[in-house]
Length: 181
Length: 181
DNA sequence: CCTGTAGTCTTCGATATCGAACTTTAGCTT
DNA sequence: AAGCTAAAGTTCGATATCGAAGACTACAGG
Image (cartoon, rainbow over all chains, first blue to last red; front, side):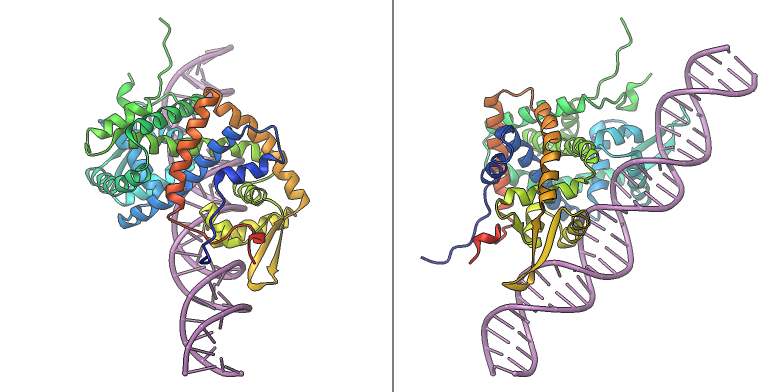
């Protein structure tokens, strides 16, 4: 018998261990939340690799993505970005600073309310988003390669229901600027 | 008709927008990866609230959790922590420093190989883990409250399959120290 | 043995995020 | 209309993470 490489304990095994110490926990809940956070960490690492190739940090990419997802005219307030990305306003300010220096976004005061600021995306920013998206989509496809279309649909639906539950707790008045009077 | 509060666009709506600009993307894949990263961010924010009540940072809690999940004798090498948590060794060193100062873990050289270090959990650390777990489990249950047991099982299974796919790409030799000769 | 090489953790400098204080503007209240 | 209060971003100090360089140990080959 060749000396076989040691394998990491499975998630189920690891959870089983601490369930013995705190029996009130729901094993299925623990499995879901642990898998979720681990998956996100791995995804972050993978994305970072591709983003490095495009001279962009993960945080900067998130902002560009949010702007593209906002749709025409691709403008958002910092406060909306802060809510959607789940970051403090301070972090948004700095991300915008960097993207601005790179010429990927614009920042101007909102004429309708001079306390507000309008962040927009430049053509270069739009192109950069597309460039990264091409790289990222290869990884994303690989991540889901073991799931057939039906399973992908189910997974997306279940996750969306969880998301709705948590995002409703932190509502945001805003969205696309064009939605406003 | 009362002036109704504006609602955030749904994830499906936001994805639909950028699918128009890059048609090769698989809508189901995009839905899954976007929901995943957003969920994790919201969960982080929620956990942070509870952790603050226990005077612990999220990173410190992750280390305690990994040690408990390792099972008796609750010891891991920094390198294993680094792999399991998806962080650089440097970050692990600092987290251990803090936990050490708080008296929640131990750190000693491995007698079998003096390059290695053994990180263990103290009784206080174990108690702290339990304290946080009690708080966290309330949030976790709330997060999954809309899913029946069958759906929870399906979600856990699907996520685990994704996780296996990404974690296999970054193997780690190790695990519990007792597994070694 | 002695040296070279690989592996493990720590240190160091740079950057990103957070929480809190501050600035500016808008909208109310009297 | 003057001042109050609330809201939106920015600034500031503290902390966490990363990447790269460094220190130390084990092991293999001459």
